[in-house]
Picture 1 (tube, rainbow, N blue to C red):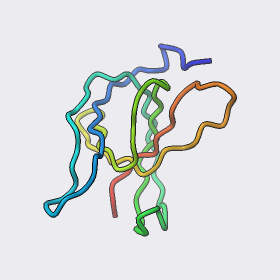
Picture 2: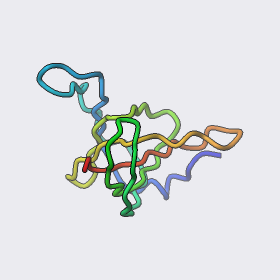
Picture 3: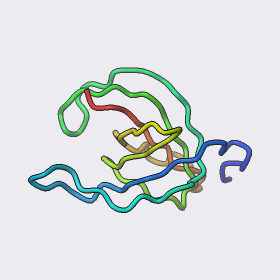
Picture 4: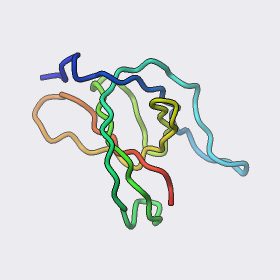
Length: 105
């Protein structure tokens, strides 16, 4: 079962993280107007994959056809977030992608 359309009330733009260079992170071209559901929450996450602490500021839900990678930039309501990690699918069907967003501490 996919997420119902009425739940996808927000729009996001995604810049996929493609790597890093001597000058900083490299991102792909922004894909805009992607329907999603954004839910704000605030908590501290200690020991993420890169060993840093981070402030989790929200969770975003996308349709399974959307491509997102860790470290990507997601802009929702003119605020830029970083993808901290992607929660693995727990069901038998691809219903949605759950992405945890934050700002690096």
